[in-house]
Length: 221
Image 1: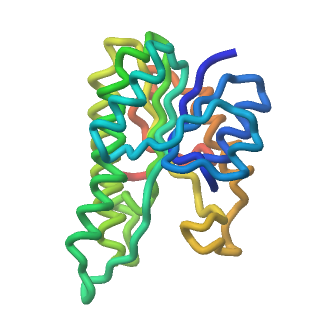
Image 2 (image 1 turned 30 degrees about the vertical axis):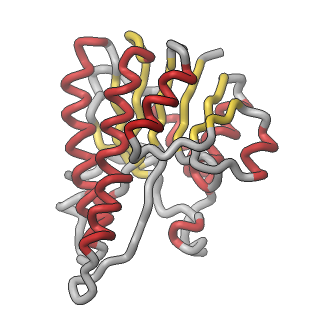
């Protein structure tokens, strides 16, 4: 039994992470701004009222954890706001950078005392953050923020290696969640998380910093 902290847990992929981790006997700390009935029904430890873009909220979360050692830190919280070239919204772009790229990095820094040799860090990104894979353009804020997260993940893999902490940079696939209006072409959150947990469980220091698809494919930068 190990401690896993997951962010963005009130629905979708984050909720499914909590469900599957609990089902296999892990101790789950579910971090969110507002808990959902579905999350509350799981019976996991919930740390609600945490806005990860606010330094004070991050400090409060650290205080609540009270030195708890985490075997896994899964940073799943994120937002997607559409932005075309014709309708650029600078505020939206900044907001996506704050939530998708800066907040995870700041949280990792704050939780370093809670990570030990052998701990694993998983950053939930997207292949929309792959420059080589961009064949459709658009989605400026989301794409740019995920590129930034990918770069943060690569640097974290280098900086955390001496501490024995491995980093996975993970794309879940096209998943039927509210974020993409439950696209019928997507896979279920259950299937996505099964693949994501397989990547996390098999993660080693040698593979740290790799950009993975949940299905095991290594994605281009």
